[in-house]
Length: 416
Image (cartoon, rainbow, N blue to C red; front, side):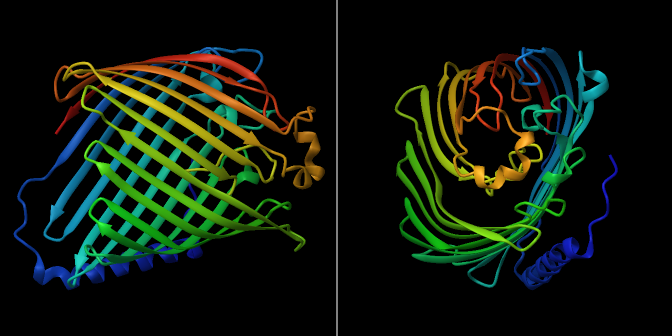
C-alpha cells in the first residue's frame, strides 16, 4: 500500500516537537553522566496459527485458518538523563480460505524519547505508525470480507513540571490521522490539547484534574463532519498495598457535531474507566476493569469502524480476569469481557443513511467473550502459548447477530 506524504499541516507539529526535544537535549548536555557502553537491543521472531470458526462474524459461519509470521526488534537505551525507546514489528499474515481477499503484511513502529532538564522538568516526545488489516467485524455489513487496510499515524509531545513532591503539572499535545483503504468515510484527522494538575499526598496516592480539548475532522463525510469534545478529566491512582492497585478516570464531556452545511448538535455525556489489580499471597492474581466511552474516544490506534454510518453511540465494558502462576515457567489465564452497546442516541444522525443499517429496531445489544490461555516459557528466550475463546453478539440496528470460537497457538524466540 502506498502511503502518501504528510501534508504541511500534519508535519508541522512533528517538526516543532523534534526541534523542542533537540533543544532541551542540548540544554542537558552538560549534565550527562557517563555513557553506558551496553546497547540493549532485542530481536524476536514468532509464528502464530489461528483458526476462527466464523472469521467474518456473520450468520453464514465461514471459517478460516490464519498463519502469521512476525519479526520484531527493539531498543531501550538510557544515556545520562535521556532515554530512547524504539520498537518495530513486521508480520506476514496468510489466510487459507480467503487468501486472495485478505493476505496482508502488517507493520508497527513506535518510538519515544524522554529527557530531564533543569532541576524539575521532563519532556517526552512520542510517535507511532500502524498499518494493518481492519477487523472484519468492523467493516460495513454489506462488505465484510474485503482487504480494508487501516493506517494510523500519531505524534505527541508532553511537558511536565514537578517530578516529585506534592504537586506536578503536565501539558500534552497530540496529532494523529486514521485512513482506510476501503472506507473513506471513516478517514479522520484529530488533534488534542490537555493540561492536568496532579496532587500526591503520598507515594501511594495521586489525584489529577484538568481540561482536554479534542477536535476530529472527517474530510469525506457530510453528516457529523466535525466533532469537537470539551472534557474535564478527574483521575485517581491508588496503590493500597504492594499487592493491590486501583486507577480511575472520570470525564465530563460536551460534544458538538457539525455537518458539512454548518448545522450542529450538542450532546453531554459522562465517560471514564475504573481498573483494579490484586495479587493476594499466593500464585493467583486478579484484574477487573470497567469503562464507558462514546464513539469520539480513541483507544490505542484506532476508532471502532462501523461502515459509512456516522452516529453517536455509547459502549459500556466489563472485563474480568484471573491468572494462575502454576510454576516459574507455566501460567494459566481466564478472561471474560462484555461490551454493551447503546445506540438510542443515534437515530437522529441516521435518517439520511437508514439503508446502511439493519432493519431491526433494536437500539441496544451486547457482545460476550470468554477465553482461556496457557503460557509456557522453558527458557528466558523461548515462549510457547495457546488460547481458546468463545464469542457471541446480539442483534441491534448497527450490528448483526453472530457467534463462534477461536483457537490459536504461537511460539516466539527472543535474542537480546
